[in-house]
Image (cartoon, rainbow, N blue to C red):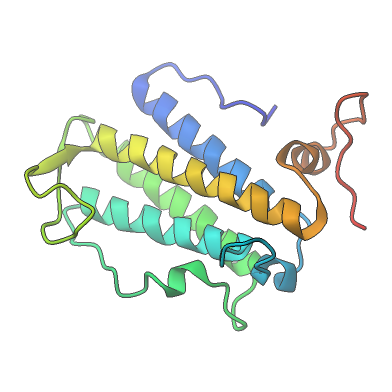
Length: 187
């Protein structure tokens, strides 16, 4: 059942399971949307479901690049929140799945989650008095970042058509209707 993360036998598995679950919750917000609906910004913010998925994909890749001792890049930050007309929801969902696979492959090759990850200097929201995070911290941060944006996507999605995460999950997984949950159906 996708309503909870899969149990894991160790810390690495647990962190990856919680990250995978938050990715699923974010993806659920896009369930049944058209490309135009995925671009829609129906709430008080300028966020769209498609833009949020695209952003989280970009952020995850940036953090994994840091784990690999890369430098990351802020060049595409603003574009990362937009599902452009030349992009499709299916395309960004496929790219998000690819980023998840890339993350899993990188983390699988790391022997020790305490391995240092350099803190980029000159980024105003990063601590300037810290030299490194750990891979463990990066995974925890990715869980936090994904969960934050999954919450944003829930609000945006509910503003589009009234659908909520649980009703979308019920629909996507084929749950039967119960007195407390009715699977979402397109209007």
